[in-house]
Length: 431
Image 1: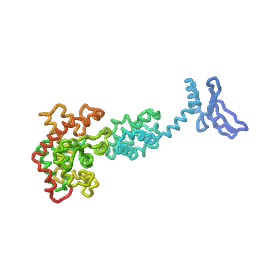
Image 2: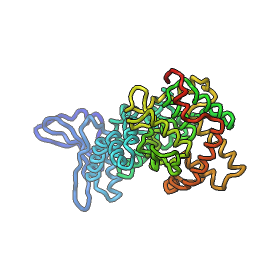
Image 3: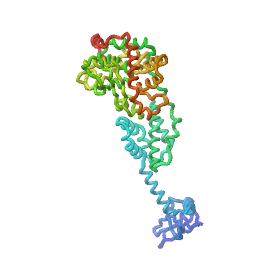
Image 4: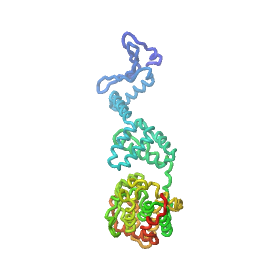
């Protein structure tokens, strides 16, 4: 058997020669003095020769280990040369399949199923927070430690929910890679409980009695604000929809409604497009359908009054500086702040107010399905109902929704001023 000293002392001669070790391993020395390890073996009845690598890059001990690995492969009935080529090809493919390349391929595959706003949100979040650290690495070289370190940078800036959302997206990318045979495990799967806990869902300040609700409505009706903002505030209270949906409401979204009518539009309905729902719901992936909102006569009166100030605009409640843009994102919030409602009631709070008061009414005299219908009216997924089931129920119970909305309007407006006074009685000032 060879020694390290013999390997080091081997010099070039007139002719190539070999220094034999054992079990088919030898050191080949060329006339130029280049030394390489070679392993001679038999496979399928034929003698074969595999070059293991150069000396001294590969030392004597490592060369013996490589030979022993070849013997193990032979015992499995495989040819070491073919297996070595297979491993080399897999390594090259792994290097080519970086996390970013797989992520973009996954994104392109999913994009047709998503709304454009969500598709953009996904790729931007990966570009901003993930690709810099993980993008250039082979997808098979990334472990849980690397993923965690990357996500903790997002946590450190206070974006806890974003970190959890990114972990979900990384897991989805790895599920895709595994299905395509480019990865064998998901390094993000085990990090669910390692990341910081998500903060509790924000509770919007909201009044919970009909007396308080009427007081809030009176304040916004008579506030020092533009008619459009005050009308939007009343429409928000009546419809109990999200403020962002009110802001982006367009005339084309209102159906069975005649501006020149006599106020008896009993079938008026607002169909909130799924795209606008996405925009308002932080691009939630489970909201992929339109949302119908039956409009009461009181809500129709608000729309008819708003037309006086927004004619020529696509938006029902246009901005103060341009009718071609929606009302300012903060217009309603500023209105409530200026009326001293900061910790008592906010625009989004009307949803909680409506739900609380109407569910109490349901307990006293409502129908058995009314709790489910209240959730549908708020674009929530009713308890016990899956998102797929909700897809088929989204337009259901329209008549009952309209009835419940009318009851709410009657309770809320029992002492309110006529809607026409919101514009006529305006004091000077802007929101």
